[in-house]
Amino acid sequence: RWRSGACGGPVTDWFWQKVDIFIAAIFVAVAGIAACQGHEVMVQYIQRLSTEVNEARDHLVDTQTGLRYRVMGDTVRAELEEAAKVRFNQLKRAQDSVVNANPLIRPLALVKTHDTETLSGTWQNFKPAMPVTFGSAVYAFIGMLIGFMIYEIVKLPVLLIREPRRRKFRRRG
Image (tube, rainbow, N blue to C red; front, side, top):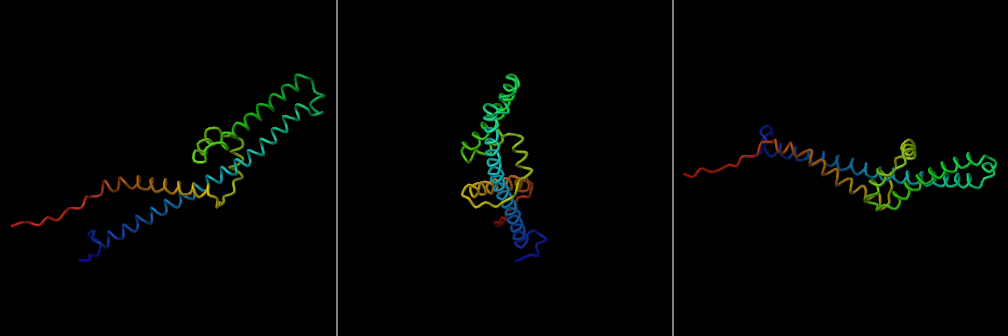
């Protein structure tokens, strides 16, 4: 009853089922880890952005009240103050959109309203981490589900191409 597997018997079916489970597990694990790291990128981006917002606020206040800027001509000081306001407002808007977004749509808010310089700096200085917060666990779980769905979609053409099993009919006679 048990064949060598060359003809597609139970041993071969068992082997390919195990290979399928193994590859699916790799997809799920990689997607979960990637989502968890995506969460960490957002955390580090928000931290960096908060620092930059504070610096921009300090610079704006300095241009408005600092002694160094008071001795400048009114036109030059107004231009510098306007540039500081624009930068502060840009950073504050980016911070508010990400921080105030629902945690499940926060990645979309980050993509939509990110500050390019801050995100680039975050990415260059990114330190991979395996956070153990509830938020990172949720992101990892969602990433695992997405990885599993992607694997099933990628696998679908193989299943459709594979020859359907033929049923064995008994001849009545």
